[in-house]
Length: 453
Image (tube, rainbow, N blue to C red; front, side, top):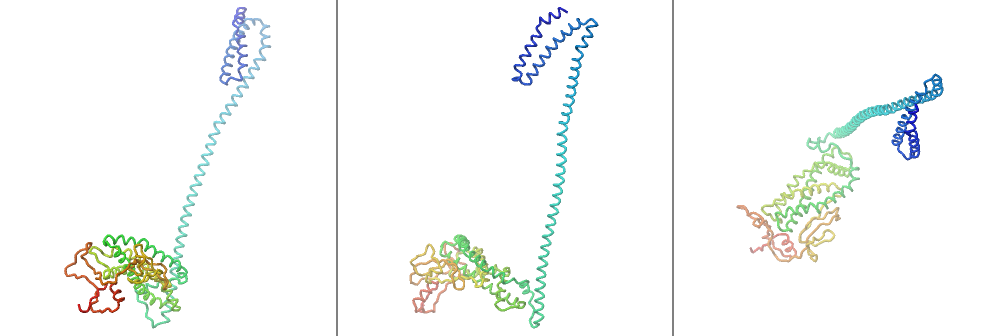
């Protein structure tokens, strides 16, 4: 026993334990948790070694019965405290395990709740999509019902119109019924007051269209004709004559359509002649398909081919500017439906320049008082100039000259066919006594021959 106690004191374990405890106390605040844990483990190992030596000494000294009783009185309370401390630790560990289990189960429960909410949201979205499809179907059905109601209303109006025509025909038995081809002209007349209210805007649109044709489509036609005709004056004359002939053909076609529509509407129309005239114009304006524009284009091309003022190169066909002619015919036809109608002013070569009706072209002689030729006609309404035209003014020499004839021997054309004779307009039996008449005829392409020839 003395040897074991001597070795315990000589080893200095208790002193080392004290030094480590003091060092740990000084550095406890500055150390990290891992460092404090390692220090605590080292002190526990050192304390365990000291306790082993003490227990061996205690075993040697406690050989008697009195020593056993003393050991029980001294060590039993400490052992009980240690046991209670171990029980507390066990209880704390059990509570910590329960908390860990709760924490591990809580995210799972939250995930399950989120999945349940997500599934419910998907079900709601599917239900909303089905409701949306049903609403679209109902909307389409409503649109179809609106269309059906509109058709029914139109049919009722047509039935009322037919009943009115029937009553008129029955009250006037002497009048023969309309032929089948004319009955298509009066299915349902348009409302005159409604159309007359929009005539101002319609008139403005037609005037703007006339200006657009002058500014764009006329220049495009010039570019097309310059491929076949080298002279700009000839090209501008061709376009001017095409414009004049288009208005003339459109007005003639409008006059024919107006007569047919007026004869048809006069049977079933109740009102004065003025209201009948307005109704006819409104009907023609609403039914533009009555106008055969292709026939007018063909008529204009034929008239231009027969015009002696225009040269006729071999490779040129006036059909190349049929797009311009078609637009002018449609525009002139629509202008006739206005009250008063819009029309163009026809000019004569050699007339005095009127600055109220024309603009001078850029290549004109601004000091010349007479018009050499016209480029574009002015637009007039009831004698008032709405849009000015364009002319070329040049100084003219008062001397006889040969007229322009349709010669196919020019450089840009082909030779004359066998037996073909160029045409000219000459007056061989006219005696011209007035200088003004002589100058007028010469400037318009007439070849004046004396009677002695």
